[in-house]
Structures are given as C-alpha cells and as structure tokens.
Length: 157
Image 1 (cartoon, rainbow, N blue to C red):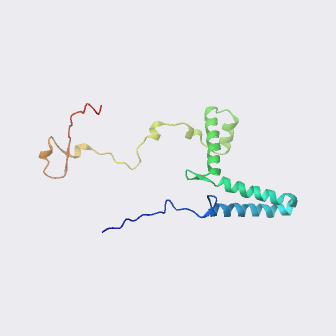
Image 2: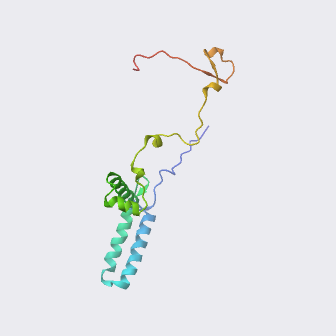
Image 3: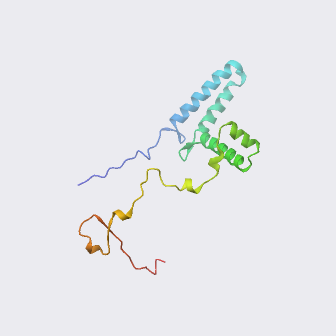
C-alpha cells in the first residue's frame, strides 16, 4: 500500500490581511514610518498624510504579477519604450538618453540567426558514425539506427 504525497509548497497561502502578504505590509509600514519621521523634522504639518501615502504606494508598487513587482514592470516598460524609440529614430532625444545611460539599441533589432541559434555547447551528431539497417529484424543488438517508413494516414492530413 502506498500513500499519496501531496506538497502544498507552490500553493501555500501567505499570512497577511486582505490578500496582501505580511512582508509587503511590513515593508510599506516601515517605508511610511521612515517617511513620517523625516517629514516630522522638516514639515510636521503634513508628516502623517505623507507617511500614509508612502506606505500605500509601497504596498501597491510591490504587488507581484508574473513574478515581477509592479515597480520593476514599470521600469522595464519605460526602458523598452526608450530603446524602441531610440532604435526607430537615431537622432532623437531618446537616442541621446539611451547613449547617456549606456543602453545598447541592438537589443531592439531582432536577428533571427541570434534568436534561433542553438545553444553554444550543442554538439552536432554525425549520422555516418551510426550503423544503419534497412529492416528492424536485422538489428540484433541495441547499437544501431533503424529508419522506419510508415504509410501516410489520409485522415491525419
């Protein structure tokens, strides 16, 4: 008799409030508290609202989707738009900004020989090294290569 082992690691529920994990709530609270402390020294009248707004913004900006938090998706979107604009118009302000930030516009140009290139460590197989047989019954050991022709199925086409 065997027991079924079920792992719930990938679908575990994180503790938190309102669907927000505790670590995001803690990070937002710490960021809001630090902002409140700094603003309390400089502008005490608006310290509480600014601290609350910063805490909420931090909670929203760390919301993950597709494995990336919102702030990173926004940053990558901005970077991609800059690269595409610089690639389309090399004499624009976006191209100068991309050069200033050392961003290569080569990433915006897709080269099929680079995109669909096989991995560097892939070794090509030379079929002339294999022993080939015309029929499978000629293969008495397991060290050969047999080509099998099957009739075409009319329904599969």
